[in-house]
Image (cartoon, rainbow, N blue to C red; front, top):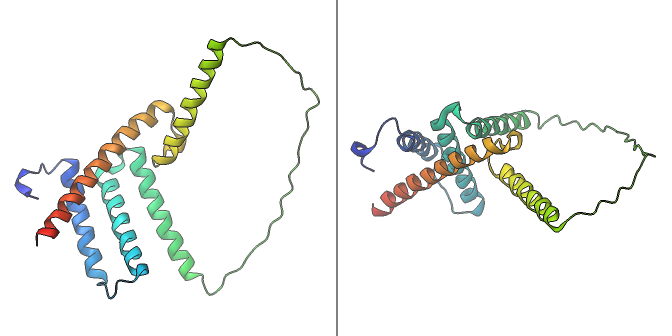
Length: 178
């Protein structure tokens, strides 16, 4: 990666700088002592979190998906800290909840004959709703977005993921040349 060709204000250069700093930190923490599957998985998770965190910080808080990613990473870290400090005194609470079911006695059956065109429109609408829900699960923070914002955030998220992959490929290529 030739730093002379990178625009310092570009997303790619911001991500690259943050990600390389994170990789240096990961390498300085603990060298790999063995190639056990557990250690390999832990290293993989650290690198993945570093990549996600670097990308979210590079985008800053301008995008919903970056705020959601950072919130998720912070809350995961808080939970890990809280669970490690409370391991000695774990208390379980049992709560009982009662559910009441209400039955409605005013059911009316309405028979409406639909044309084939109305049925097709309904099927298309249901198909779009299913696809939108699937997209909401993939984009961080997508659960609370309307369709227009969801599509905009998705496009930006895909752009960022593409940038992430390009940078990681270049880093891997540089290390394989050494």
